[in-house]
Image (cartoon, rainbow, N blue to C red; front, side):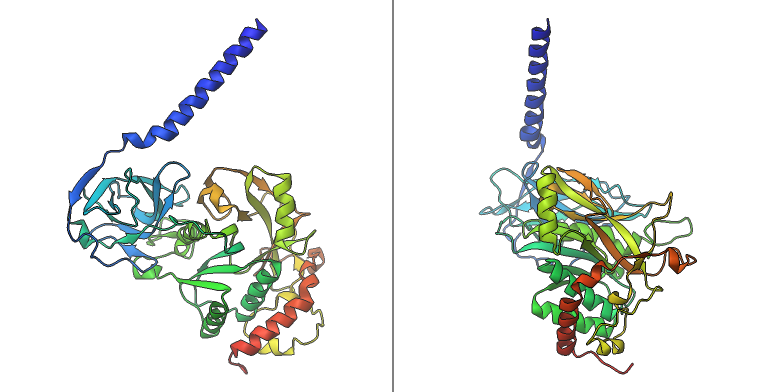
Length: 433
């Protein structure tokens, strides 16, 4: 009886596997396609901006990305209103004087936080033997689609990784002016192993603009303009309130994070999803490379590594009496080396985490966790690393004696001071203010 039972269970398992494979392989066969013939369908302008509105629709397209992890899919990242229910993908198939269109599957990201506009994956399976380089999107089927902007489909051509670690930062806003901490943060990223830092910029001070220009020319920073206010009323809050008349939360942060993830999916081995004032600091290693090699070996099925965020309040100042830093006093902003005391964790308060991810295993991401992925997630223990978050205090009334002395960042001080001084000498920031 036990032998028959094992055979029965094995047969059931094989049936389940076959069903799953059938669904994944033949899912696309249920998609309906139609063709419209247009001699000049490839003549309209290709969208160049980070945010492109669709005419006559409450939809703003960021970019289409070819994604064959679940079939021959094109995943279009777009900001859509809750009222939008119909969208169609029009593919400019290679070598054909026609457009092939199909109805899109609108997958709204769950972390919308009550705002009327939010990020969505506008998913369409590419027609068989199409290999489109460009596509259109519209709310109607068979309409005058060439009056809409034309979009290039990205990620179709795969290249060897150009970076082991890419840091995605979203979004620089509020006339950001913390120049000294920003330079130190970029130089820390470089010391830790980042080859590229992608930053979505809404606005910043003139000093920070000069810093961005310097690092862009150096090749470290990729600046992506994020003109969200041109189209929507962004909120500085992450959640919608009853009295709120804003369209989208936190300057569209979730849109920039997901776009950065897909932009670097086949360019970078790992992607870090960070804010401007955050640095993932390892305790056991000097670089992210050594840390991630160990973590990945111990957890081969994990694609998302979550690190505890700990607050280093800017109000707690410690002078390390380091040499060759006198010029820093003329630069606006906070000195990271002066902030080496962190607040203790608060009982019953959610301790936010930030992530290092294998982008090829992530489908949708939020700020502190992924929403959909292929791999497993791991909460990295505190003894391995933490997120050094230098900002205003979470616990302003806490006695300084209760702060935790954490001088981990000081182990980089010699290289950091040298590199910051070199950057300052080349950037030539205004002084004497």
